[in-house]
Length: 303
Ligand SMILES: NC(=O)c1ccc[n+]([C@@H]2O[C@H](COP(=O)([O-])OP(=O)(O)OC[C@H]3O[C@@H](n4cnc5c(N)ncnc54)[C@H](O)[C@@H]3O)[C@@H](O)[C@H]2O)c1
Image 1 (cartoon, rainbow, N blue to C red):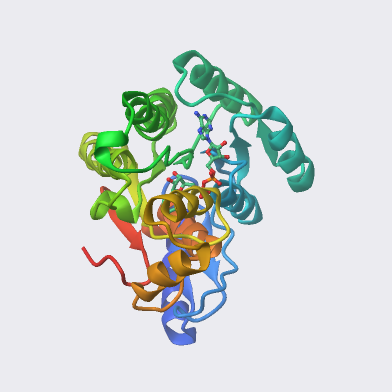
Image 2: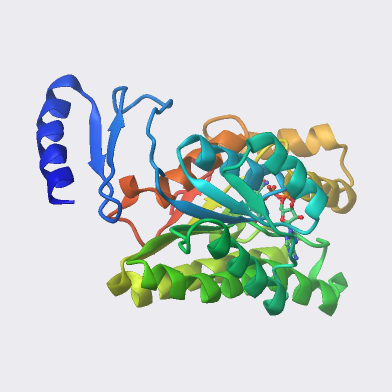
């Protein structure tokens, strides 16, 4: 580790001259080298070498992208979602760095089994936990929202996130630290009309993230969350847009146009935009960040 630090210091000096970025992972001692200038979107980091990540909601649009990127960047990844056949197909695509077990994130017994299987699969450690699993539920006017919808949306988004953190934190503590990234939303910063349960649940995720950032900082566990805006080609956007088609009585093209018009950068988010920020927060590059709720909204949300 001492050696790695010395090399990082030398490399940092060279890095200043060559406009390269150099960092060192405190826990593993891995020296991370970025081959391009800081403003380049593409990265050749092997950020997650020797690390194990657990990703929930990994058969979904964004979760699958995150699991794939973590493997590309050197991690072993354990993935979970509702259906084992979807997970098997992803593992077959990714190879032996990926293992899986299906579970419902709202069921504590099933969550425990996933965490046990993940620790058994990859040498007893979990360095990164990404809580992607989430749902919008049925949207609509508050007087029409069923009590069951409220409970369902809170259970999947909040209770599921809580249960995974509860089970993974003791493992991170034992191994000297880790990084948790939770999924909030633009709707968690400024609530979205006709999506009250989702907005409230995603705001709760920010509260949970901040409380745990304070609580776990002394254990070298960082806890952050991402707040994406509408992300094209995803499951959640497909639900949200069909809810809006019904409640606003507009064709889908008009719904898309309305939402895009609100974004200063003039387009909806892409899955890669969300994957980039999530993996950044999970990595040693974000070593000085905890308790943050980062907007990925093309400038639509600024606080
Ligand atoms: N797509 C967007 O526009 C957008 C915007 C802001 C925030 N988000 C958040 O990003 C995350 C991913 O969104 P996405 O668009 O990829 O959604 P998605 O629907 O494609 O994926 C979500 C995954 O979570 C899984 N899941 C749902 N309930 C579960 C349960 N009880 N147990 C286990 N797994 C369960 C689903 O099976 C699915 O594979 C969600 O938390 C969502 O709220 C998405």
